[in-house]
Image 1 (cartoon, rainbow, N blue to C red):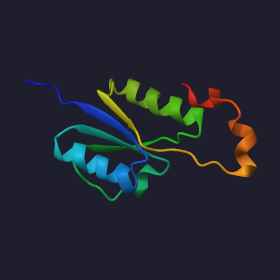
Image 2 (image 1 turned 135 degrees about the vertical axis):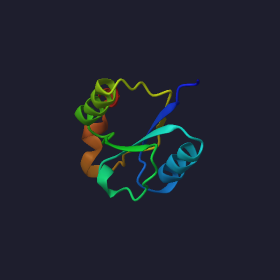
Image 3 (image 1 turned 90 degrees about the vertical axis):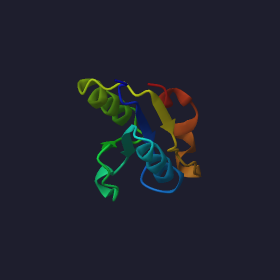
Image 4 (image 1 turned 60 degrees about the vertical axis):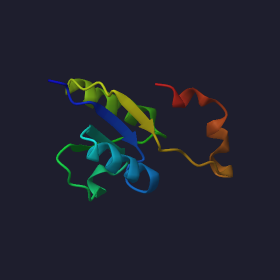
Length: 102
């Protein structure tokens, strides 16, 4: 018997992320739908598990992967759909990409 494949999708609450969640869920994958507000998801498929992740916050990223690890989950695939915006008020924070590496 094949083990169910799993995928973590960030930015899953709308747009391309939500469509990607729907695609993998329909294919039977175990879908970890990551967003800043996982309770906002209206998708109730049995193989969908909402997880909290904010790609702008390295501690949130670590916590998400710690949650997966504690559940003995190693995603077969990660779709990093979420992003972050650049604005002048935050430009100084983005001088080094170190905060983006786990």
